[in-house]
Length: 487
Image (cartoon, rainbow, N blue to C red; front, side, top):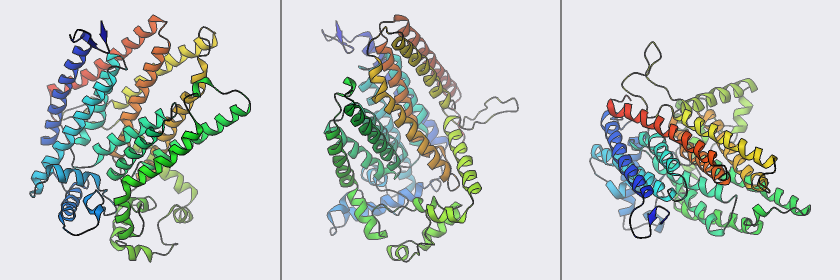
């Protein structure tokens, strides 16, 4: 007999052996593709704020080595209002080299190794919870859909993607069960995500909003005497205490950065992109940053001249506002789901490859289609009365999880769509890719377990998961056969 993939006698089961072989193959292909990307693309460290991050690393190390200074000098705190401190701090302490060209190369490899290990760890963690094909698809989408291209840049995005993903999972789990320690984990992961890149706040805002909906729903049903058994592991008292723990841990993790930003710029949460959001072009943002580069100059900025939502709306017509939002959202969502490729006159993709998985949106669409079919079957069984009480869970936390997912995706799409007038790039939206892939596979796996009495459902899900697996492998086979990449 075997338990979770390892047999009692110590003999490795077929499931564990298959997963081990898959992960070894994944590591080999991942590092091969990453090697090709590192040596064929992104050779100019002056692009995409990479030299900026290198300079911040050097300054951070100098402050760390200083004999005199506050206690938080030795923690990640240094920001210039654009680059946050975590990536320069981590890279500087692990792979620093005074030769910036060598440090540039080492930093890219640090990102590749870190993300590769994370994908392997994710696969090991989920193999006892999901079907084998479900886990394999998740690892492939995480590695080649979300990480590998961004990992070959000297940038904080890979670190941010990891901590953003952990925060996302904590938010979802807290909709079902809310132990206090999980709020602390959420505060820690969200704090680290903020130290990598200050874009995690909308996720926390959506979480607070959705849990407020749950509180209202919870109290309303109690007033009607209809408490749901599916919510028995969720306590409103724990939630209120947990939110306090979340805030305390988040602020504690970010405190060195908040202290430094407050002393340097007059606000703990200062960032220049928050001003750039309310400008019309990136050059305007650069001029603003150069003109108002200190606490004193920012303090002297008149309220009517300060870039803000109120002032921007006052200076633009409703048509201009709508045009910028709609056009930008269309651009970032398009880049996220169907990134551009190099094509010939017949519309066929040509070498060199511009993306590793250019069909990443189709893979999410495939998972969504499978979810739609499984949800339809579950709904039909509930309506026909063949599974008494199955609708309770779907009517509570599951609905709120859907609201959370749609709300988070919508807010980030609109926010980055609005920001597209200042700066475009799939690196902004790509933080959502792994969370979405995980959420869709998680939902599919959960429905398959609930419908386990129907054997055809498991075969149906296994077959469609196998098709997705083959589609991804086919694409990777093309890349391996012709490993040529364009910038």
